[in-house]
Image 1: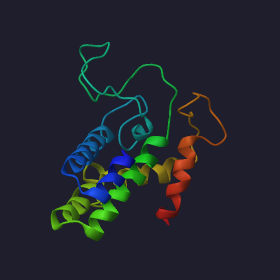
Image 2: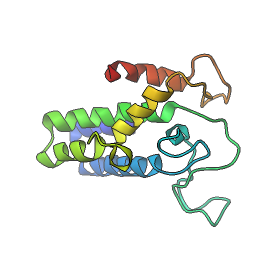
Image 3: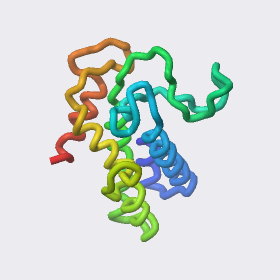
Image 4: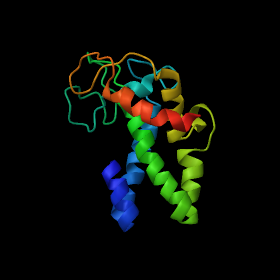
Length: 162
């Protein structure tokens, strides 16, 4: 998705912005789903495995529901990756975007509230601030390494928290 955001910044393609907005909305919805790791406040943001459509093994489930089976948890690269991607879009909107785009950043991406009113970026920043030193699984190898892909993403984000 980061490549779509970068492409949008150079082209302002309406179809790219539609994809970005859909990604942001899907992320917002998934942030508030209950997972094996918990909900929004308990650490569910570090759970990255979701069904992306209605075609999966459990017909009782609907698309965008968390996978509740066995899985190497937690994989903390999701929040860090979303922060980087959405922050690039937000910075462009605030600097060069329309008034509607600026309001979107202030009301959806970073309104600064708590709980359900927390913006998508702020929710992920709060998660990274609380869990940056928690052990996790590397997404490529399903091993618990000393410095995973998720930790590298989180280290990229930490300077923005201070």
